[in-house]
Length: 102
Image 1: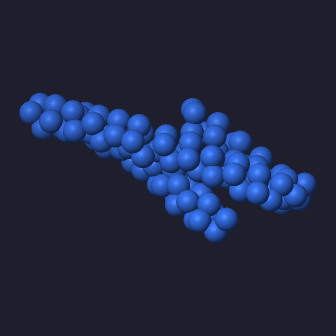
Image 2: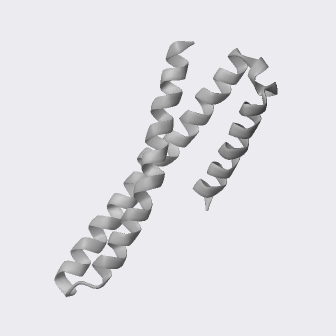
């Protein structure tokens, strides 16, 4: 059970890292659009590649695996679902998933 919890935490950290870094990349896109012509095109292509890799290779898989291991943990200890703090936490997780989808 401890390794399931460890994987859940690892993927949660990776998921949050992706969610926190993606707005920074969007800011870099805006800054790159204000540069001179040759630099603008080079930066735009590179930033698009970085954004695509971050979203598709790190953030989405981490979100899916974090959710998978969380459900596994809830299956192993199903009594937690009735605890008030867990219900609040799951409410925040739903909000996080909505934020991720947006």
